[in-house]
Length: 141
Image (tube, rainbow, N blue to C red):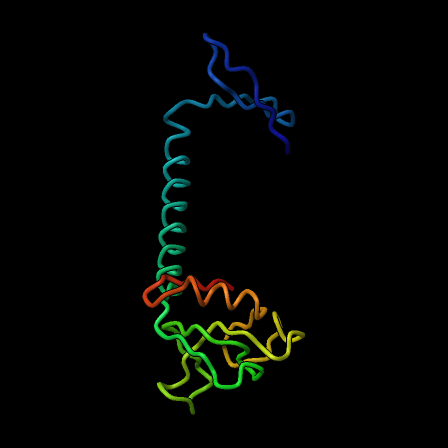
């Protein structure tokens, strides 16, 4: 069934016309109000859930590492964030997650780590200069 909306002139209420049964449904405020309120409530619930998800994923910079071997797996450095890997537990502090450079640029964007985020070394150098301890970090999938 398709409903066709008809005019909303100054003297005419908006209506829906059903071609199958030839009925007109007047869209009065009393008919639309519950639907609008339900839609508004669902939207607010979804927005609150999204806000809660963002809060869970928001972290801060809490460490900065300059490795002795700048050609190693962390590249020229790493910026540690207050997030932890649920699979990497043998490291200090239980497996902190970092944003770091790499000696394997092909691995950037691939699922090859235990939670760290690899970025190009040039980008890491800029990030290292700008992301001081306490800088908010938002991790999105």
